[in-house]
Image (cartoon, rainbow, N blue to C red; front, side, top):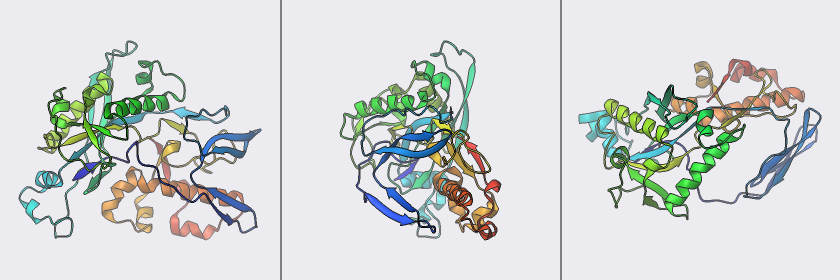
Length: 360
């Protein structure tokens, strides 16, 4: 099978070691706690002095009002899984027979598609003007399992208004709304609702038996075309039709959509300084990576220095390794503040200010 997106919203839990310890060179103790959640920040003036943590899995709402963050555009969508042989045929045509599980002269095929879709959000009374949404595939994974496969459309604050969601965390509740709805469609027990691409485009559910899925906890046929608000569903449907023009055969009864995908981007961005990586509102806090609302753009020269293979640079640009590099430069910034940074590292990895960060 071949799939195209990012990790599943619901997965099995696994246990990690509870505590691991190390020390700074000046002897100050550092404690790393696994399996714990930061529930709130302890703030003294304009500086973070600590964190409030728990091992609870329940919902929480931070009481800290001093952390500066912005509500930003986020992506939602569905994961789509095709038989690998179908993608090989689409991409290679006559050469598809040369593919031998990626170990032959011709590697297994992949793809990356993106389209801008015009439409009108008629369900939102405050906005009857035409709206352009970007729909794209994310993190194509030949031979992977579901946990990688989606066509997504961007969501803005105007989408939240139709659900009576407001405020900086409206995007978070927007995510939860459709995650809960998908869980109900699946019937619980981490079963994922699915629908063939052909049925999704026709707004129907004819297939009572569905193509094989690599998702291990079970799937259940469902009306995924009723999952999202109409304007998002229609944007996804138009985008899939456009993808089929570029990849004839993309629309197939053997292609299976899985719901829901809401975690390819963060609904908020914790603002930080471009030179020090420190929060603009609280000293001592370094928001980095995807969940803080950032994906960084790394210059080609630095990608070469990090010895990335050519075929992996797309994943690098997308999110996976970029979050690690973002954290690396934040670590360098902390080291500078503590007087522990070795400036000779600049010649190896490049200066932090040469690495741009962008909003989703």
